[in-house]
Image (cartoon, rainbow, N blue to C red; front, side):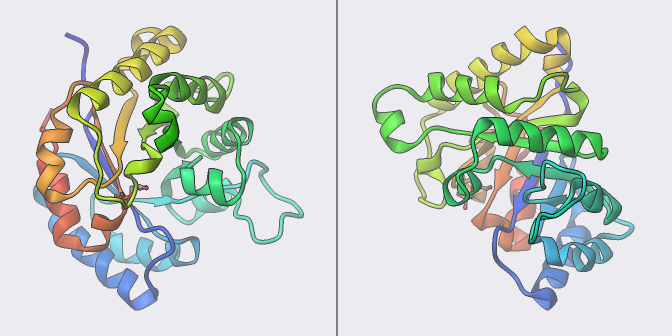
Length: 252
Ligand SMILES: O=C[C@H](O)COP(=O)(O)O
């Protein structure tokens, strides 16, 4: 039986929260994290990283960013370098979220470059993949995800600087969730592709599920084979819901 990694439950706050709310939410998550076996992380909007990092001080909850630039520095107005995220105390950077792929036209090559920049800065990249509803209906989900995995993981990637998040685009914020069999099939395919690339080390790479994870469905989803945690959007904006999802992750 391969060693299973400690589950990671990461909250992606997306473009929500002002500073006072963010501080309060982070403090509430920090206060409740002690009894939870899974690793927890919160990913606020970039300007809130210092405030949230401050509220997390002394807790086990990790800080993460929602994106980073592929370059370490330079003339990139409005973008944020991975080295700055590390400097602000981040452990994680989400890259290739479907909202970035859609809103900013990011492709696999750019996502891979961002993941490489994150790793070079000492961060762990949470690389997001997932099919659209049309692709799902056409039965192309696994193939799409396999293509994204092949293109979005940088050459020479280190498995300990990598987390994968499978988020079907149609399940994000919709209340719709794939069947357990669907999730098992996609996560299994991701693990197999990772094993081709990383050998036995692939078993240590956490593969998160994301898309309408709530306290009510978390136990079932987090028990599926090759699901090593969750990337949570809407439900991460309420401390009690986020902590309940964290508590639903099996202890390993
Ligand atoms: O990054 C998080 C995902 O997009 C999931 O969002 P959601 O939990 O609101 O469906």
